[in-house]
Length: 322
Image 1: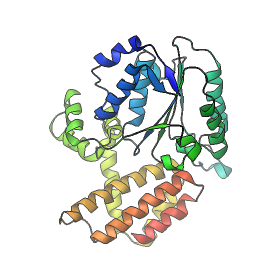
Image 2 (image 1 turned 120 degrees about the vertical axis):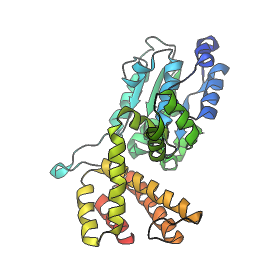
Image 3 (image 1 turned 135 degrees about the vertical axis):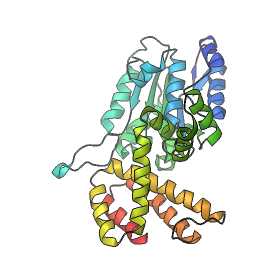
Image 4 (image 1 turned 30 degrees about the horizontal axis):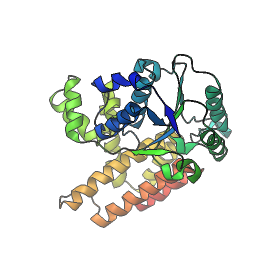
């Protein structure tokens, strides 16, 4: 099913010179064609790694469809736009639980679409990390997809689309996002006024992920923090089990931080694997060992993100394998 739109509304998409988007020109041009055709699917799935720029594209697309300033979308103040993301709650003993999207949030989406449009002929909802919807939330969302109301558009964002219910995924038009070229990040940074070593540092730490680039631009102090975290990984690899398990004990108290650190480990060992594969020296592990550790981190990241496994137990497994 499609949203029928007035093609004249999208002249701005043709004229748009978007300084907010890094790379992803193929995906952006495809979205422009959908809009210009006058028929946009009721539900889109933006899939790809974390921090790769999916949310930025979703926000830009929404702001252009609603013909409003991107700031209204980012601040969540446009009456025809709704942004849903996972929330971490405190469980027993004050421990922070794994982020999730509860059924109450999907009911909020349903209520949003039950109301008539305020300033646009249609309404949009963006659901970030959609794979973190609980099972009952996914079942509730499926009903919305089966019976879309009027000109409604859902944009789901996910780094783990395979964990969505097959019945949901079959009703989504998937647009895949990939890492962007260093040259695209470099061009973007130059337009922002960055020069020399600043550009080199951000490119190296971004690893082809525009979301990370934006993070470093907004807060340059994050560059120093990121470098320190990488040094901590190197120190951890060289340390004994006692030090590693103490590190895990502290880290596992905050699931959000666990995810961030696992992302860093993934980048660290991915980079090491590429160096090993090209014949360069990198760390104490062989090519086979590096590949095995990388796969283990990927598995643990997925398990921690999609199940209620104790993060500390999962991380201790990794510490033993290092």
